[in-house]
Image (cartoon, one colour):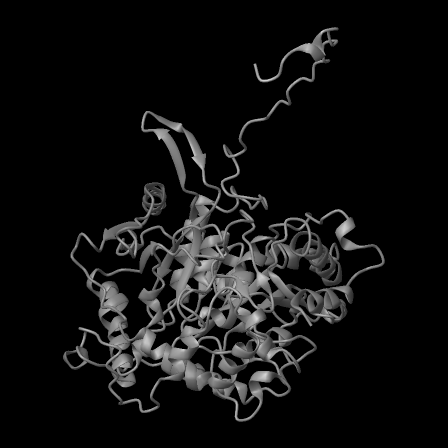
Length: 610
């Protein structure tokens, strides 16, 4: 059964007698915040059932039809039932949590023990649904949230191929960007970011190993919180790496993302994920321990003046591009400089870390760690599933590789599985020194690297990176641009990443809060600064901190948001292309048809070929 058939069958279960696609698209709660919706529901002006139906109608009209964002891979057949239950509890005076009655979407690698699939975008995991909720889904249910559906993603969280296309999966097809349908939503939590931007739910949830929450947030113009590894549980989430994976929210405001984080976090050991009882890699071996006072409500840190008196270390390392032959466009760099100026105007002191000679220790062990962890972590996940092709015993990574080879027409029409193949070759001995991987960080890794070497290198990336910068310059956070703005989706050449900064926090497992910062524009000349073309796609900045520093980062990001209001002034338009101005071409006028002159009497006598 093809992906569109599966999706349409599930959508049909939620259709009202009148086709939603033929109705007016609801807009009355576009950009409504969690706090505003809770106030409406508390007053009786709105019900969770009505709000849920509004989102379903928008999804059917704008995601499955119309511009075709294609961010939703599946709708929950029980969504309206969950909404009615939330309404019934509210009428009894019971509100279970900050997201009570609020419709949310989950990335399709997060288990829900219900009628929905959890497939990581691959038909290898389609069949019998997961047997139990992930901890994140369980926390949402316990808090009264309405699980509206699942979002599309870059298949296997973008860890299948070097040639992958962000936002594409075999099961879900290609997700598009609400700012420009021809633009890429970035990955791997592409559907989560696009859905939040398009107002298909109040908040959504994705997962990140390195950039998969913050890059979609950047590309789709929303806030993304990548939590400290271990603050949110990975139990029941299709893994890449237990060292780096984390689950976090996308929201249209910092306050909404903070409320969503409050609902899913594991303040103490959850019994299913050891990381929820410990500290991330960057803190291991330092004597630092997990805080005992992890907040229950992160919205308390949302402050409009959150930048006042703060010290921020700005780095531009890498912003000129990974490839010297593909430099970052000047307008993108200019837009970041405008964001830095906005930080200062809002009361922050900015320290130029690059000019001060500070260098971040590289996380050279990351790819080794991801390959090694994935081979064994994904096999452990397969053991939790039954009734799907990838879980047929003895279920290993090779099982998924074999499935893809046997179903290459649907799983590999555009790119291969060379990362899967490479991961399968990893030696299980953590002390085996693999000559395919080297680093200059340690004297012992110049000719080969072991898994334990890689862990030590990435631990140092935290100690001698973000932690060192914070301590040396007495900083509240490190700031940089998140990623280059969204590129045009290209199924032939793949992704067009020019730069990205999530790696500063990925290896050591530290948090990031990304917030919309600017819209790059090209102006006619310095003497005509108002004669400009806006590209129509957003650029975000990221606030980095040490482990469990989410309160500080939320305060800073909310201060920037309040001072700039970038998203509020630049909502997505579902344009067919971005930019959408000055690209229309001319209007042709058809030649006028004149009547033929009457033929002369001698016309037939004129010689040919004169």
